[in-house]
Image (tube, rainbow, N blue to C red; front, side):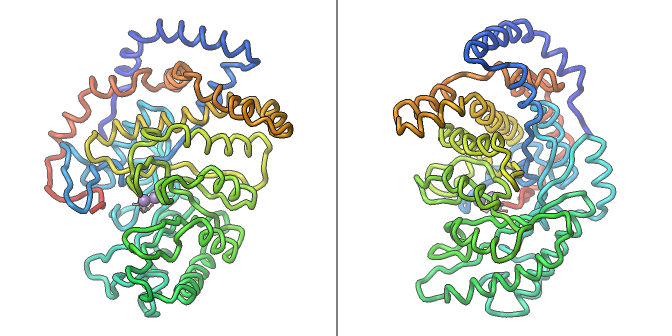
Length: 429
Ligand code: LRH
Ligand code: MN
Ligand code: MN
C-alpha cells in the first residue's frame, strides 16, 4: 500500500512551523483573556475524529454525467489506501465507513489486516437496498424493506443481516440503514401500510443485531422517490427508532431536509430523547447536493455543534454520536475535499467549545436575545485555524494539508498505478 511518508510530511511542516508557533501563541494569549486554555482546546481537537465514506473517495457524479478523475480507486483496497492518505495528512479521520455491495470484499481478514496496518478502523457499515444488483432475484423498483411483496422484503432483510456479518468481521459497531422506498404519485402507496411493513422488516433486522451494536436509521425527504418516502423526515425516523428499541437511533444527513429547516433543533430533540445515532456531514444549497462540509453554511454547522457541545458539557445520557462525512465530489480531487471537509467539521467543533455556556444560559434566562446571539457569534467569528493546524502538527499530520498532498505527487502516482477502467467505481450513479 502506497503511503505518503511521515518523513516527507514532517519535512514539509518545517517551512510552516515558525509562523504557526507565532500564530498559536498569539491566539493562546487572546483566548486566555476570555478564560480559555488553548492547550485544552488543542487536546479536544486531537481527540476529534470523523469517518470517511468509502464511496466518497471516487469522483461522484449526477444522473446526467460523471467526469472521472485520474487515479481513482478501483476497489476497496485502493479506497482504503486513499483513506490512509487522508488520515495521514488530516490526522482526524481514523475510520472508514464502508458500503455494501459497492465495496466488494472476498477476504475480510485481509482487508482488516490492511486497515490495521495503516491505523484505520471501520465504523457504521451501510447496506444498499436502493439499487438492483446483478443476479438479484427480486427488484427494488417498488421498494425494499417496505415492499408489498414479502419475498422482496425478505431479500432486503437478508442483505442487511449479511452486512452486519461483514461489519463484525471488520470490527464495526453499527449498521446504517437508508432505504429509497417511497412513491412518485399520490395514491401510489398506502402511507400507513408501507410504514408498517418497513417496521416489521426492521424488527427482524434489529432482532439479529449484536448486543454491542447500534442500528442507525437515515431519513431523507425525497430522491429517488419524488412524492413521498417511507422515512421522510426526523419525525418518521424517531418514531421508527422508538418503536424498534434502545439500540436503534436516528442518523442525520445534513442534505436530507427541506431547505431552511432548523437542523440544529432536530439535533437537540434527538439528543433529549437519547436518539441521536450519528451524522452524515455535507453541505447543501437545494437538496441532497452532497457538497463539501461547511462550504456553504458554516454557521449552520456551528449551530449544530453548539447543540452537540452543550450535550457533551451536560454529560447527557445516551449521547455518543458517530461522525461521518457523506459527500459527492464532482469537480474536486476527492482526497482534497475530504481532507478539507474533515477540518471544517473539526473547526465547527472547536468554535462551539469557545462558547461561554454559563453566560449563554444567563442571557437565555434573562430573555436577552441580543446578548445570547452575540455570545454565539463571538465564538463563531474567531479564527481557530492555528488550533487546527497545531493539532495536525502534533498528531503527525500536515500543517498545510492540501499543499503537502499536492507536493507529494500522490495522485500522479495513483494515476500510473491505477489506469482508468472507465467504469464507475464509487458506486454512485
Ligand atoms: C442517500 C445517502 C445514504 C446513502 C449514501 C450513498 O442519499 O445519503 O447515506 O447510503 O447517500
Ligand atoms: Mn447519507
Ligand atoms: Mn444523501
